[in-house]
Length: 256
Image (cartoon, rainbow, N blue to C red; front, side, top):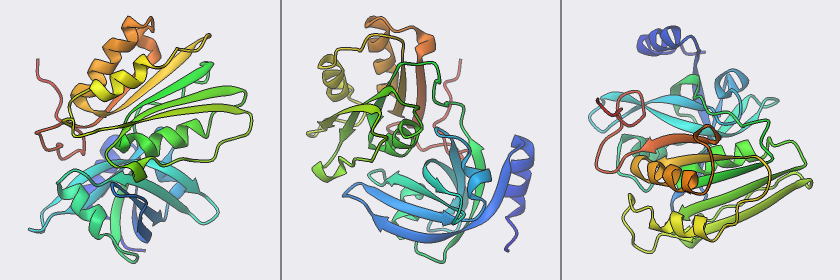
């Protein structure tokens, strides 16, 4: 087995997590905006629990390396494989890697990462964001113990991006797919309209907001206005319009 780059070994040690060189075994388009990448090696150790992500070391056209973070869609421990659903609408080093990845390619992977697990005490779960959230949304929802309820409000760029998944028969599932219709990617209007069409269920809920930085902050405010406590809302900014992600694969933090 190939040894990870020293920077990956150092990073994993600092983060107290795992690192391995993984091989691409499958790379295919799921829709106009989504591509599926399946990696082999260290699946259970790297993928963690539903809601976790991994850091992948990728290079740009100049040969410079950086890291990008991707939520895990599913894990097959028997085959020692894990799958990522990655949105390719953004122009950046991560999207370049995703578009050109082929079986046989090897990449350093560090994981698991992330601090947003499924809330085990919630009666219903609301997953909101753009197509970058599908991977996390569906893996998390498929881990809900019936009876329970999963609600999806997802903004898509193309009709074929409205991907679905198979869930336990005991789980109540509903989805609202909102077409972007040319809106700017930091315009929350589409998702707000989807939320306005939803009557929040009775009982205790938890919302998971994954997507563009400013959009998820607006959605958080809208949910608080609808009566949810801040503790019931988890936020994960995958990207921020007009800015490249930092070398850790996430948007730069706000400076106080």
